[in-house]
Length: 269
Image (tube, rainbow, N blue to C red; front, side, top):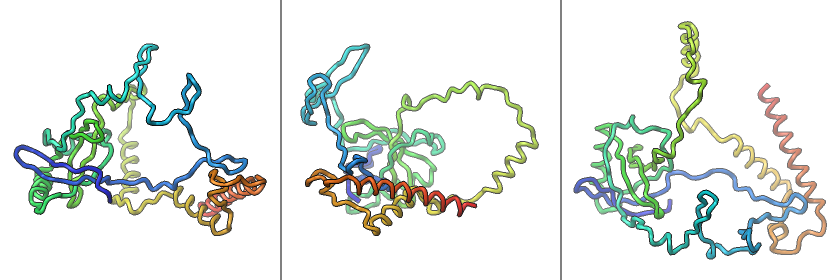
């Protein structure tokens, strides 16, 4: 894993040097958009709607629209804001763990001790475990102030950013205000159904079937030779003289997907 940030956890006079790592990664198979006719790579360009020119990223400013008026914020404007540059993760308070709403949990990060002795790190970890508390912390990452929950996962301290209170929508559904009568028998049957599905949750028991099948499909097409040289379709050489092979490839892909669906249906039956 690659370190994305280095700093220190601070609460009171205790200072715990740490390294920060992203705790998750995307396992989706990366797919590109291509032209169905010839397999050429589709790329997006930043185009100005006033002059029609393609604009380099370095020449782009930010803007905010308010009541029909556009306010342009230049790089100098944004640089002048009092952005916090502290490398500290400040503990604001320790709260009962069950008070942290799961709806507010966002991006998780692992914290690794970054000192010759991990004693302070282990002390904080054990304290959180024994008190069943979660530390609410404030820190700055990529020029943005973040609120986060600091908790324990095994032997590791996990920092999980939190959504701000005004980022969580209220659930206002009129149907939930109706007085619904549930009989004792209905509740008993429902509880019985829950009991029949009861188990200990193990994430390893579940796999992303779509990504698994997609990877299998891609491997099968590669093995069958249903591929193009990257230079042919991504603009690094002359385009193929004819697009017939690409159309055949698309038809083969559709047929493969249809066959996979049929096989699943048979297996399910």
